[in-house]
Each structure stands twice: as structure tokens, then as C-alpha cells.
Image (cartoon, rainbow, N blue to C red; front, side, top):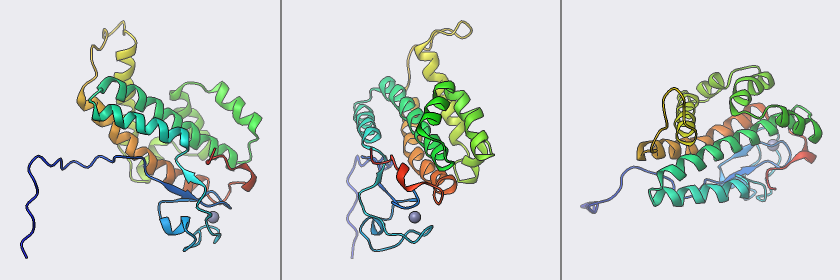
Length: 216
Ligand SMILES: [Zn+2]
């Protein structure tokens, strides 16, 4: 049988329309995209518990931000996309660091103190993350299949910062381009997968049941 011809003007580059959904193990914090876990068909590979389908990642807060960013991307608002995507990436990093701290037994007070004293994104990636897991963020990302992620994220941060703040050395960056915006969207999509892999490596199994915050 003859295959139907693809219609002209079809966009071949796959950009997701919505945020993905992952299900969280209520016992140990493991995350999976497998909907059978959310619907009680398969057990958690880490602790053998069944999912309840209610705990999902990303949080509603991240999901709302994600859908705004995608809407601005459809409207080619490159500058807003880059600025909001950077906010999203910083927020998702804070969430994963918070889960690692929780898995290591840190109380809410300690977690607040840590975030308060490590406010810059550079310090959170460069000092806080490796001090918690014993490896650099770059090495962890590379081992989990996202070798280019830290460098591309740094580059997007640099163009965002140059756009927002005049640099005495380079002068202001006048515009953010569609290429910057596309890079930001790719990083946003990759950030989910990387977050889940980091979670499953450093959090799943040691996450105290009473400390779940992912559904908040
Ligand atoms: Zn589990």
C-alpha cells in the first residue's frame, strides 16, 4: 500500500507541546515516565512499592511556568523565552538540590539556611552540588548522557546576563535571537530528563517518606 505523502510545510523538528509527566514512588522518591507505574500495573524497581498515581513531577508551579514559556516560544518572543527558561532551569536545579538535601536527612530549617547562604546559581552548581554528591555537575551530566548540557546552560546564562546587564567589557547585547530561544527550549526539555536521572541516582531509595514535597 502506498504511504500518504507528508503534507508540505510540515515542521519536522520535534518540539514538545507540553511538559512531560513522571510518576513518583510514594515510598522512596524514584521517578519514572512509565504510566503503568502511575496506574498500579508495575512496582517500583528500587523498593517494590506500587505507585499511587497522585505524586507527579514536574510540580504544578514548574508546569505553569513551562506552558508560559512554550506559548512565548510559539509567538517567537525570543527574549522572554530565554529569560523565563533561565528562571525555569534555576528553579528545577533548586528542586533537585532540595531533594538531595532531604534524602541526606537535612531538615527544612537546614535546607532553607543552605539556599539562603548559596544564592548564586554559579555557587549552587559549582560548590553546593558537588559537595552533596561528591562529583561535579559536569561529570554527573556527562555520565547520565547530557555532556553538553552544563556548557550550553552556561552559554545561555551568559547571553541572558549580557542582555539584561550592560557589560563594561563587551557592551550590552542588543537582542536575543531565535537561535538562543531554540537552545533555551532544548535545555528546558532536557532538564526534565536530567532531573529525573539525577533524582534516581542520588535521591531514590533514601528519600524519607514523610518529606515528600513534589506534589506541592
Ligand atoms: Zn520506590
